[in-house]
Image (tube, rainbow, N blue to C red):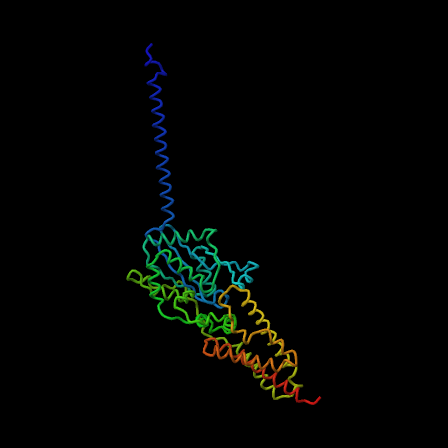
Length: 410
């Protein structure tokens, strides 16, 4: 029998091996093509289509919440083909955190980037009665995908948290940073052109939003330090969502408008009825009581005057302790070197000592007038005037009372 006819001949073994190699090679090729196709599909679904749009959402202010006094900014990504309609929000925080307000006071507030569906986001602002307006950005598909990729990277648990700063690092400035990373020098140049010139002080910028809320106006200006009184460049005002909206609307990029005409997504009903100035009325009323009481006998008004004096000095002294704490321990630059300590301080407790009452009252009056000289032209001064007037009247009353007691016979 010849070797070639034997089932396990050399030729047959070689043929079987060749077949196995071909099959293995074919399987590897098929797997490689399938794997490559899956990668392409994954990359394709992670990118936006030609129908995608990127918009900056600007939400109106409301006095219902302290954090909403100046409005809000967010980024909306829409893509019908990919079925995407999401809002990326840099203003997310956990107010249920037991340390939130302590961190807030000390300037160590941890905020984060979050993402939600557009309808849920819009519904929240409809409930709160805040307007929502959209500005669609004129970006190329490549720029949209780059911005989308940056957001997807920032939303990761390791990247989404940041320390909030009211002026330098908030919901509006984070969007400016995002656009700068996306567009590069072109955006930086366009923004610098629109920001040319001098701006207002931070105190005046903030006060413009508080003209209808006396208690917020008094409280906010009480906390603001000397650094908020420095006239700075117009770019500083970008921390305000309304300002960011206006600058984007006027910006020219690549010799064309950077945004399409703004579209209101929700317009709340505006109640034009003005609430009475309860705080001003109360403070002026208390001042009037002291002025009238000075003409009456001690027996009739002595107890009432003491009660008002004790209440006013206690409240202001407690506020003064708080200002001193912020000046020393808070990392917020805006509350440093606070001239409000000239009139809002804990030293009013010295008036409880009869021998110190007159000299202390005179020194406190001088300090108040120094504060008035510093802020007489400030936008917030008319709202603070009733507080200062009440203090002046009470301190003058303290001096007169001291004189009367010293002249009375033993």
